[in-house]
Length: 403
Image (cartoon, rainbow, N blue to C red; front, side):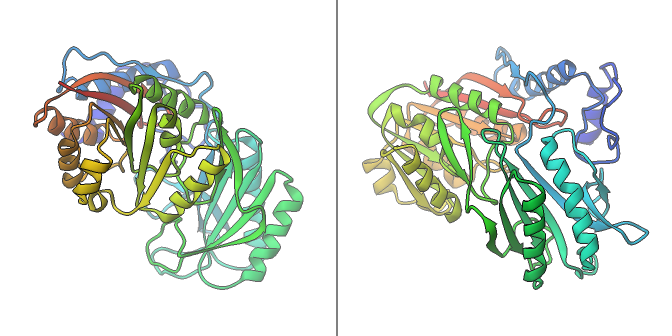
């Protein structure tokens, strides 16, 4: 039976509520908004236990939810399109559709200040006379709008992604948006000349304002860029990182590996517990920010290396002798761990492994490999954090210890 059919049957066991969003059922985003939030958490817990239970039927996991599951997201990524009448639209992909975009006036997951900007950007794009990009014909100018919001300061960073040309137009739009919305402190212009319809540009220019958006996660001060990854829910992210620190054993003379480290938040969180934390990420821009944020927070015992994790760990002399770890943290992409990375984890024989995942199926697959290989590991703890209320997604943290 198809996975989406199974999910629908599971959902049908709960009483329905009236979804507050007028786009529910049309927009492809919030698939659980017709359930009470408490029921969403129960459903996610049941699904999670059904999968983790294949590894340990006695395991118990609580799903930690948000006090207020609305207006929680710190980033919006929207797509330009065109209505049948020829007007520019701006919104999210429709449910089960790559081509159709649902025109959004307000998203209940975004801060109200962000929704106000959506309306102005749509109007300015329409007035420009430039058409939206069409993924079928590969013609047009406006492609994506990305907005980052700082929950600490209320400030906003905007990135307009287009095809080539029209810098003067982008400068005019940036000036108008900054004048009408004082919270906007940065406007970037990204150019994507590729066929792939993604919001990751080939080139990026700061058009107006500050190069970084300042934010905080707990005690950590952060400088953010348009393209770097950050968990979408700052309050839940703070709880998640605190849990990782609580589970990690102190090793003042020891070493920790933070694999797929991004801008270094996990490395910074665990740095007080170790002599050295090594962070690895394949994105040089992520590590540029990681080093900058380490300086901002006076953290001096974290070192970062750029490259694919499976490639860098092939240097066994360094990683298994000079930097032999007491703890390895992995936070891989949705596809999970590369076979070479799994082999390197087992070869390193750390006392503890913390595995953070947004894809429970990949997590269970990789844990199965670690639990049934040599050296033996046991699954000690698991916790889940609802970083994505009203959606099917869930962030899961597990702790493995060497038997």
